[in-house]
Length: 413
Image (cartoon, rainbow, N blue to C red; front, side):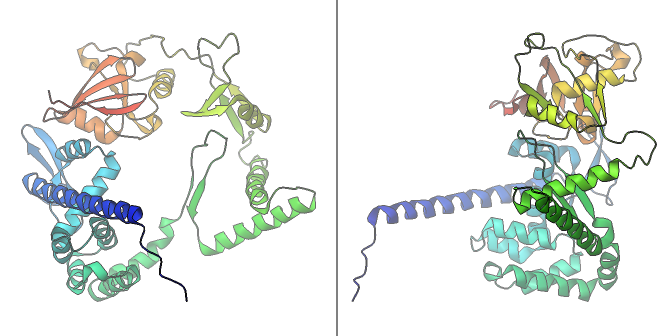
């Protein structure tokens, strides 16, 4: 008869310590949630959804972060809260929205979190799942979560489906009919090995046909002698399908084009720099050669010196200036924002109307949301050196943003 193994005292001690740390972490989150709910009450913007309100001399907008039944909060106040929390603008906005969704739309769930019966991460997911529901439907779900700490996700899914049928059947039908509009295909930026991830949502028939075409071509590659794995051959097959379409020349010009930017660096003339970049991603020079070898047309742009100063007198920004700024800064320069610079506005550091030149040295990429904040609220920044920006929030918190990211200054101004 096997003897019971005695508990390992060392392991038991470590696990007990981890459990205690988890309880401390949850207690801290509960305090954070309660403070954020109080902050929301203090920064509510009255009015209908999307209405602009004059607050302390500037135009503010009430944002509906958590759906029907939750308060509208000040857009500019939210920017400061998210920055103080150290979260990205989009991620922080979603995080605060989930908290407000629990506090105002799921009072039973909120009470379970505040009493320590429900882990905050589970409540966040519940708020996410209930987010699209009307106030009545959300209240129905909340009333039926009599034991929120024990509910399973499949059970919650069924409860949400029932709530939609009960309280919003027209919406349920509209969502079914509008589902086709949610289809998409995203291709990420390549990594340092020259590979890119693809994600998408397709019509089922389109997905079936695509999968069939990839499978057939992958099988053909294998029959022609490829020793690569099936997964690799499937990825190659998708690229071949794309190139076959591009070679059709439907618009009367070579469809596959590669643009090569050459920059001035200390190693440009000696040829000692083996690092190239796709946007801000480092890739090898060999990878560039491979890509250029399969292109039907290669465009070499003039050498771009990021330190060059060529101001123009007009307010409109020349393409060469925009390119220089995008290559210098890569993303929106607001704290923690990762919006690509090519999708941003270019802000004149010193306003053009006050004599500020239209020159890369006086241009900073800001996404539309943060451009509005800088223009219409008390958010301010200074350029301390090229590519480095010191931001100050309306209540005096400060950050430095540079090519290494966002750095919080511990002291307020």
